[in-house]
Length: 265
Ligand code: G
Ligand code: G
Ligand code: MN
Image (cartoon, rainbow, N blue to C red; front, top):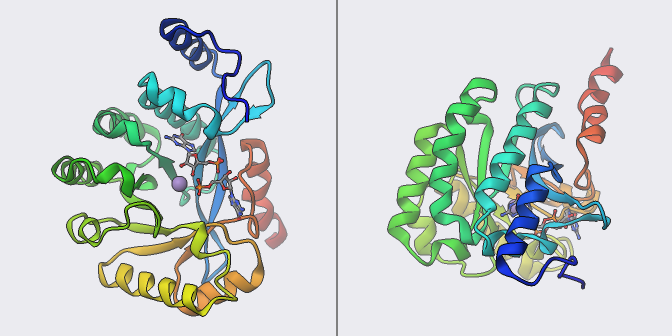
């Protein structure tokens, strides 16, 4: 995998290159639909960053997030994505929520992000339609800070999603201490769900735990109808994955948004 992106070797120059790309609006949001398993309705979108690099193909996050983190530009990236999401969302169904990924290097910036974006969002996008996805890897370092951040997010009206649950530092203490609104089961527990009784046992336990804690569950990486049905039968609330839709550019979401309305008309 090529990771240098022909970026300059010095830190200052690299920072300038990424900053330039940010200013030129080269980072765009892609959207992957999140579907309610009970109804099949789209309830929201996960926002996934892409770098529309002039000299490369459309670059996925694993090609640039590490660079953003190193340069402490993730907060700036999130703000730029949010501005575009607000614009896109104005033409889409008003009940959709938007889930932003918040990266490991960004814990302190998260509070800033929430505080700055909440007033902006209140203007044009109700903060209750915003979700922040965080991973457990981020939480292990400072639980007090994490609790403070989750509370701050809740005060803004937004929701907190525990991402990639079941991998990394899966720890009951995080679940006990932090009032997550949603828990997202990692793709690793979804892929072989229909064929592995052991996976089913784990997922069933995750569902029971999440629901007992008052959180809803999203399964990611759902690739076929059988898996979607199994998840629904087991009591899972929401799902995303190639079975429903891959991450899509805003132009493709627009047609998706109104397809149903047109069909009903
Ligand atoms: O788009 P793709 O599914 O390849 O995304 C892979 C991962 O990259 C996501 O699961 C998410 O963790 C991360 N990611 C995507 N967009 C963003 C973003 O805007 N900020 C951060 N910090 N991570 C992101
Ligand atoms: O686990 P994580 O959120 O980092 O994974 C994100 C990546 O998974 C993105 O590249 C996204 O395009 C991809 N993805 C999204 N849905 C599916 C799916 O149903 N199956 C697989 N294999 N990958 C998916
Ligand atoms: Mn995510």
